[in-house]
Image 1 (spheres, helix red, strand yellow):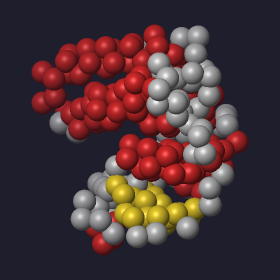
Image 2 (cartoon, rainbow, N blue to C red):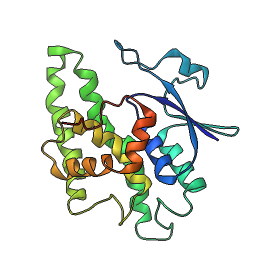
Image 3 (spheres, rainbow, N blue to C red):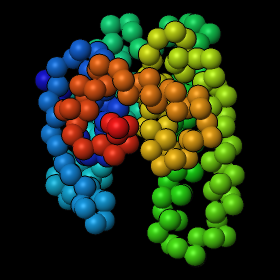
Length: 211
């Protein structure tokens, strides 16, 4: 059985969602962040030297990096779903979004997170961070206008990968100016498989809170 080493409030949540959408059996091995530092526990390093989540075990295979895990699961267990045909016009753009999620979209969010701990010392960096945030999330928002999914008419790995940066931005208010992003987040977070994954994953600060 697939085993997911899952850290709360992490990119690992989108892997649980993917597995639920696939209907594949899996086991969750939970880990909690330190309440003060927000860092992963040292016990994750017993599984992989980087001590990061998600980590996936499938038989003798151990994979880190959520993009690699997403591609692997779709290829092995997707039964032809969750990615466009490799000879289709959509496929190169699918790969583009799949890698854009971590290659570019997360950068302004991480910069804002880290510099927020610097207080006034971060002031010289804030204009550039604001500019990059507007640049990237404006680009994403425009792409999502009039679309339900990132590629085509059904869920693909691009949606799972892009879900985390958009949820993180939405939860912190950064997506307030981007209605198409907010709509995308609301759509995915209302899906039955997403809600089931949330039950299994536990604490997740980026989920929408009930009124």
